[in-house]
Length: 322
Image 1 (spheres, rainbow, N blue to C red):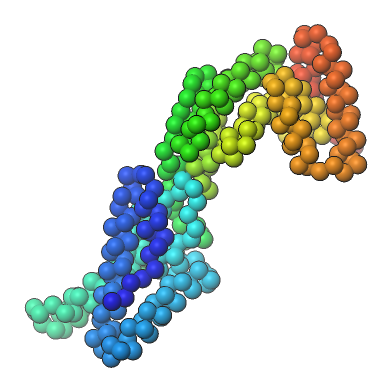
Image 2 (image 1 turned 135 degrees about the horizontal axis):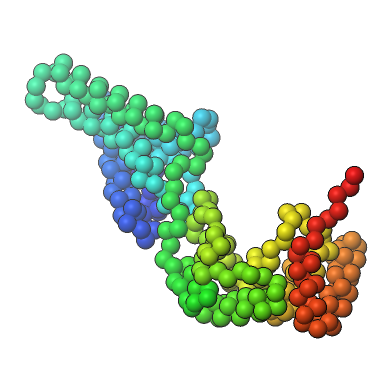
């Protein structure tokens, strides 16, 4: 009996979502459809050679669609690409290969019915097979290399208020401390006049996969999976809360604002690690020396003067050359 490569469908079915409950069924139907095709060929060719030939041929036809253009052959064959964390194939993505193989298999089974005229059975079988092939083709012909997927299919846990933070369940043990530190850091920055940001919810968008949802003023969506694990999540949120007026900011102003905010919120060690990762070339060393001198002078000033400085720094724009 011929069993097709339906590993991707079966693996996706482990995702804990209502839609994913139908994916194992789709994988089962796809396997049965390929088995019917193998049985049909085995009725014509000697079984001794039909089984190995079809096993290899079916695998090659399905697997090698990943290396051809356009993209629709891979989608109708069931090779719809890699699945990221939190991603699940949409039902239409799973339905297309089932429609193709299932329609052909159903047409073959129609030929085997012991009822009706043979000519009528052939006509009905051809209509079913051709209609299924065309339907699968028309559905997938305009898809890109990535077919329709759904994101966010991960169990989340939430903690605290002002802001409430939600992360994938895998990071649940780290969430309480991260939420408390985040809330304290944002309160400190608001009190110092560095930001007016007051999000109600901060969600780890890592599980959104390739289709990231946009943030709003009240709900921030940030990729925090690794930052939560390595202890840099609070620093990332601190940087996110600083709003520069201009899109292009000179390096001294940007680094100065980041360092000042990091020192105010107890994230200076994270800031230092980020700078080390960027390299220690002479230009970077000179830049960082100037930044630390500037921020050191500001930190010696009264709180009111520091507030005026950070507001000027966030509002400053590099001069345009004429």
